[in-house]
Image 1: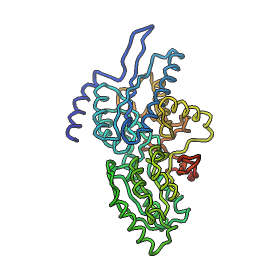
Image 2: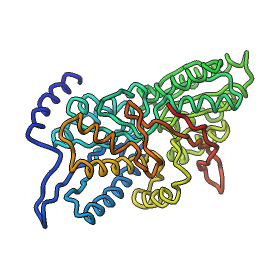
Image 3: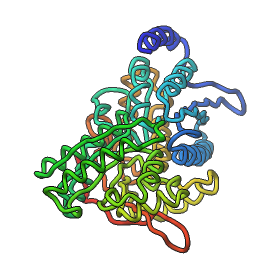
Image 4: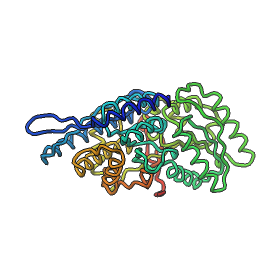
Length: 408
């Protein structure tokens, strides 16, 4: 894979001497069409975020093009979406197509493992990659071409560790999906919780394709029993940093008295997951264990802006959007600001990176003010906690509480 990418980069780099992202069209004056490429999961894991984000981008680009037109600006945005299915290999293939086209502006991918896979191409060819949802600490690197519009794992990990400890927990049993983002978040939960003087134990990892969680749950159960020698069950908790597969995990854990005797927590990859609500046994397990997971919080002060936008996104996509969805909306708005400030898209990597940073920092987005740290990640954030309840003959997500504001 690495040698293939290096060869591809060498070939495409030579093309950038002669080609760019912009395509000129003749009409009533010259109009320059700028391609925005999006790497989203439309049919794989987290597809509800991918589909809602696609709708958010379509809405934003329609607004931007209307604004360009009203100001007699010569620019127009055009969206091209690649379905990556959370698969790093598909993400690389899509990125190679994007690079070959000369496009320099990419929104996505959603997962950290995908971002890690496309990063070598982005850095070598000077392509901006802005993820609305990647959080892995390993991707928090200064002066690269990757940006993230969410706070990193170190921030959400600290917030959740503090909240779990404040609920009287003194021992964490941890399991994780085996990818860079989930493992990184899991490690932050563990290190922050351990720094408070409490016990942690990572007992199992699993692939995103896992369907049989028998051995994983057996390990969790054994560790709960081990911790019970020194802690009450009310002091023990389980954390799973995972995606859609959590529904299968909960479905298989349902009915086990030991697994149901402690509280469970999740990561931001399972925040308000809609698939869970379609599985009664898995949802009831979440209810029985007081499960909740964190998600980047939308500012109440902007509710009059984001609430109707989420309604439009739902009407267009059939999916409930969230802060990740609206990050995509803000990202393309920042790109439009950059284009206006620079009279187009800077052709070279460093000027492009600097132009994007200048446009992003201080931008008043629908998700709140954008402040990037030295590594190009959102510098601060508050997290909403959502759990599951049974109401009006249906399972639904409900607001549990909110973290303290964190900044790093």
